[in-house]
Image (tube, rainbow, N blue to C red; front, side):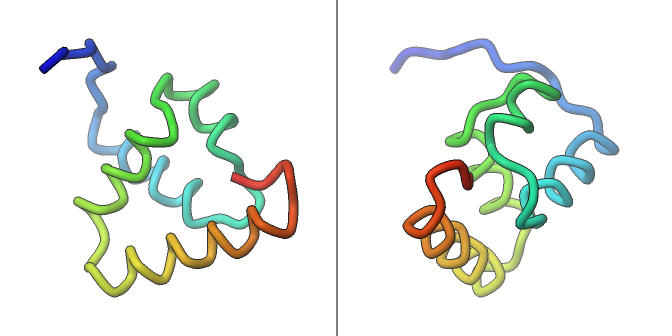
Length: 73
């Protein structure tokens, strides 16, 4: 398995990323530009941070919005 070097995240950065990801107004591209982590890493972070039901609801909301709006997450 290839190990890609990812930036080390501080606890306050994790909190900021979670808040940004939960916002309907912040795209994955914005999070990547600010913190250097891609959408797959954000999804993994959200999965490990949120309760499973909250994660599923968030993913459904992201998918529903992305189907309707090209520029959304």
